Length: 141
Image 1: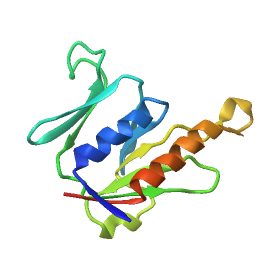
Image 2: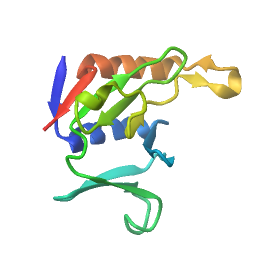
Image 3: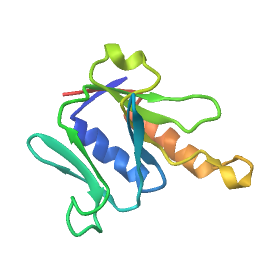
Image 4: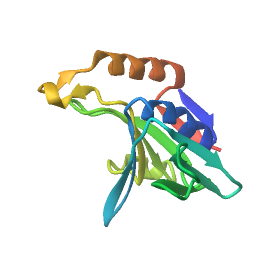
């Protein structure tokens, strides 16, 4: 099943999981930036999507992320044994075979690293429910 959404609809949906312990990752060849927080919100303008901390005085006063709207047209869930799954975003479906997407949103950790990688069953259950509701593949309009 492939779901047809706008980029801001999918990102907004995923932010609820970031607030529960997930993470946003933006990467390029030079490095990566991670954004986390229980207070992250999304603001959409005509050209930009901005993810920032709602507790900030303004969207520019603390760590935040600007994404050009409609930059990512395809996304899919990525899973690997022993790792927490994430939704990976690419500019095109053809790029969607790359295992290092330029933008990704991770679900809350499946493992408690402080307890010898003990499984966190609640987070695994939330992920399964999300999959049942939304599927694994997305084309952004």
